[in-house]
Amino acid sequence: MKKARLIYNPTSGREEMRRLLPDILERLDRAGIETSCHATTGEGDATREASEAVDRGYDIIMAAGGDGTLNEVINGMAGKNDLPPLGIFPLGTTNDFARAMGIPKRWEDYCDLVIENKTRPIDIGIANGRHFINIAGGGSLTELTYEVPSRLKTMIGQLAYYMKGIEKMASLSPIRLEIRAEGLDLIEGEFMLFLIANSNSVGGFEKLAPDARIDDGMLDVIALKKCNLAEFIRLVTMALRGDHFNDPRVVYFKTSKMEVSSPDHVQLNLDGELGGELPGVFEILPQHLRIFV
Ligand SMILES: Nc1ncnc2c1ncn2[C@@H]1O[C@H](COP(=O)(O)OP(=O)(O)OP(=O)(O)O)[C@@H](O)[C@H]1O
Image 1 (cartoon, rainbow, N blue to C red):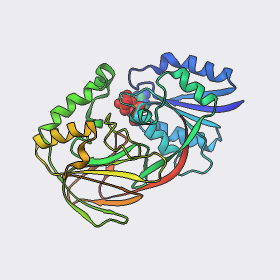
Image 2 (image 1 turned 90 degrees about the vertical axis):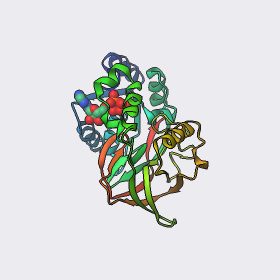
Image 3 (image 1 turned 90 degrees about the horizontal axis):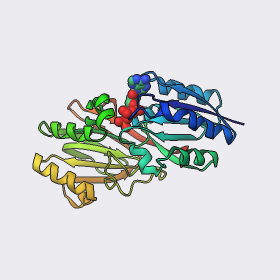
Image 4 (image 1 turned 60 degrees about the horizontal axis):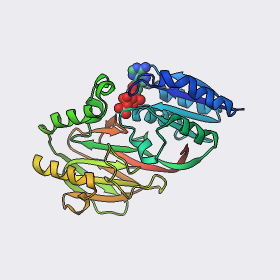
C-alpha cells in the first residue's frame, strides 16, 4: 500500500470537495493508495500540513482547491529534500496552473493518472524566499486576484474577476521600476505592471507568455510600459490573441534570476495571493518537484 496525504480547501470554488471526497478516496484505495485527509481551516494551514506531510514521509501529497491552496502547499514542500510527487485537483475559480498543465477536469481521470504514477518534473519560482508555481507580478491589475471577495467567486465564478477589473481600470497608475536581469542591460522606467511567468497560462490568458515552459529552468518576464487607459485596453485585447509582443510598450525576456526595485510602494502577487513587496529577488528551482499529469 502507498500512503498519500490529501490537503483540501473545503471552501474553494463552488465547494465541490465535500461531495467528491468519498468517491476520490475509494477510487484511490481500491488501487492500493491509502489516503488520509486534511481540510484546511484558513490562511497558512495548507503550508503547515504540506511541510509536515513531507517530513512524515508520505509517498504522495495531493492538493485540492484553487490557485491559493496550491501555492500554500508548494510553499510547505519546496526547498526540502526527497519530495514526494504532488497531485493537483483543481477546484478553484480560475485554476490557471492546472489549465496550463492540461490536468484533466474529471476527478476520475485525474485519480487514474495518480494510480498509474504518471509524473513530470516542474520548475518552482522563488520571490524573496517565498515560492510560486505559476506567476509572480506587481503593478496595476495584479491586485485583482486578492480584491475579489471569495463569496462572490463562489456565486459567479470568473465573472467576479472581470467585474472587479472594470472597476479598477478607472484608477490605473504606473509604477517606477528598475529591473536587473542576468545577461541584460538595466531596464528602467515607468510601467503599468510586470509579470513573471513559470507556465504559459496566466489569469486565463493562454497566449500571454506562449514560450514559457514549466521545466526549462527559466522565468518568462513581461513588463508593460506606461500607457493610457485606451492603449491599455487595446494591449489587453492584443494579449488575448498573443499579438502583444510586437508592441514597443511590451518588454519581454527570459532569465533565471533577476532583481526588481522601485521607489514606489509595490505589492507582489504570487499565484494570486499577496506575497510581500518590492524590492524583490526572483529565482528559479529547476525541475524541483514532480507532479502527476
Ligand atoms: N476553511 C477555510 N475557510 C476560509 N478560507 C480558507 C479555508 N481554508 C483555506 N482558506 C484560504 O482560502 C484561500 C483561497 O483558496 P483557494 O485558492 O483554494 O480557492 P478559491 O479562492 O476558490 O480559488 P481561486 O484562487 O481559483 O479563485 C487560501 O489561500 C486559504 O488561505
